[in-house]
Length: 228
Image (tube, rainbow, N blue to C red; front, side, top):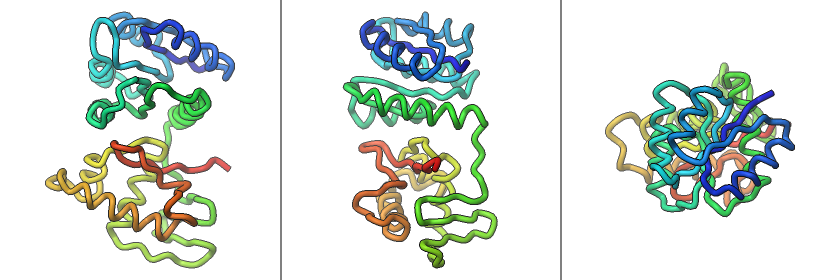
């Protein structure tokens, strides 16, 4: 049975999440402080962590930083902090996802399940990927839509492969700039917006309402790969 640790000081929220996750078949442990949470994380070795940032004895970002020194388990932040800088800080420290309170339990469950699937298999991008009517063959460096070749520039293709490598994980503008353009472009966020728009125009059926190349407002982007 896969285990989840919830570090949340609001008891009613912790109970709410615990009940929903148990219904999904997970074993749940809880902690109501950063100190207790770190002890539980070290002793329980959970498969995933759901973490509030506003804890009574410290900042949840310190918990992320501590855990990332010894574990790469998925960390999903669940916080009332909606400021862009709070999201960026948590993700840069090593969080895998960020949901703002109030949240949809359905979305939380879906995100947890997605991270669990990736963590369970030690996610490795397949050589062939399907995004609706788009097929991507990484071995042949070939992209087709409705069976017809799609021309991508070298930068567009590089951005696509980075998004595939980190599929379902939110990548900040800074992370994408470092991965695609390299060091020294940290302040060129418009590059990411322009090339993400290009990918949507070429690969999405409705670029203004994308199904695959998704925006995490104020933070960055992620690629959603449907399972079926």
